[in-house]
Image (cartoon, helix red, strand yellow):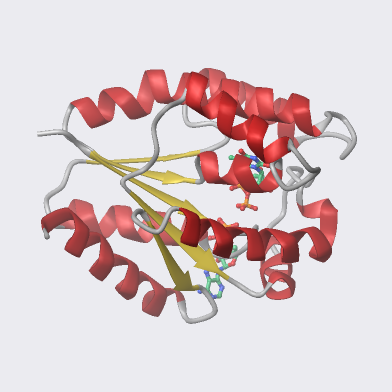
Length: 207
Ligand code: ADP
Ligand code: TYD
């Protein structure tokens, strides 16, 4: 029995972390062995790269360098955490994965999306079995994200215009990868979003 790989995607403040946490608790209560993790990060090496990439000046890295850093972090995370958990038959729930690189780096200039996909094919070569795209109005998402204290602000600093492009990009991605992506309306009470997410995850896991 192989495991099952679920990712959460969406703009900053859409509620991914909240929903990932709630689904992990639900599936664990159902009796699944659940491994909850996140990107960038999820393994000690990848968490070090997270600090490099999320702290500091917004112009610190070019989008090309970011593609390399996020993919390096993902490779370590995949090798050391995700792949072993899947081999052990666990349900892996990951807060962001490669779709975030397709959006946050791939949409920043013409041609970058193709580079993200090439590097992904070369170094990662694995997609989630199921991806929840939490859809959210960018203004509301950003207001939510800003409500959290912290110094990981590089991408949030890009503001609502980039967030609006990301939102449309994520909806396009859901059509491009329609076999694994499900769009969920995030502008509802967390429990309502979680109920829909749990229903879909159970259907896919057991159906
Ligand atoms: P993300 O991981 O997508 O950035 P979070 O889950 O961290 O989003 O949520 C961002 C903020 O919004 C948190 O303070 C969280 O408590 C709050 N939040 C999450 N989901 C909802 C929701 N459905 N309605 C209102 N607030 C929410
Ligand atoms: P995250 O901690 O999930 O932020 P949030 O909870 O605000 O959504 O991710 C941190 C930032 O990293 C977020 O702004 C998106 C960005 N990011 C990329 O630019 N590329 C990537 O490949 C990943 C995984 C994240």
